[in-house]
Amino acid sequence: MFIIAGLGNPTSQYEGTRHNIGFDVMDALAEKYNISISEKKHKALCGKGVIEGEKVLLVKPQTYMNLSGESIAEILNYYKLDAEEDFLVVFDDISLAPGNIRIRKKGSAGGHNGIKNIIAMTGTQNFKRIKVGVGEKPKGWDLADYVLGRFSDEDRKKVNDAIEDAIGAVSMILRGETDQAMNCYNAKKEA
Image (tube, rainbow, N blue to C red):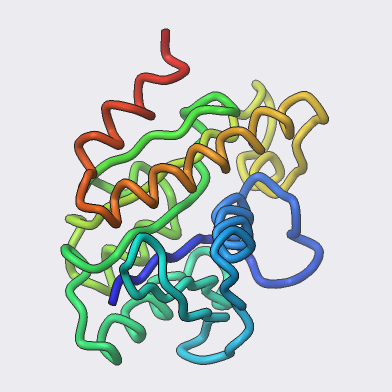
């Protein structure tokens, strides 16, 4: 089994915000692969299904962003899975422009509190991740206000394209083609 988690905040006031892009990707995956993310367990909403012939558990932690690792660690322990082999996380990144995604096999938290908590709770930073660009915060803005804000119509269109790219990247990663996914998507919009 492979755990795919999208990060976000659980209450309706956060729907559609920059910080909830991970949840948006989980919803898009669920729709494409006919998976219902409705089971409440392990401090998360979960949905079992199959993508690219691989059994998956789509996860939307309900702990709020900064405690995402509590849910992830509990799920990995319950299913006796290895974060370095059997886990992929999708989350927002302010250092990428809207419409861009970046795939990494491992790395630091890069200032992202949800990732920081996952690293702390799993004891490793060597897990796969898909970062979805939400754009840099404007000068003078508070970071929390920015990531908890919503996209402009123009940026939302770009982000919807990035969500489709993230779905494609998930498929490649599940087929064991992480390097190919990085080559395909990381350079896509940088040119």
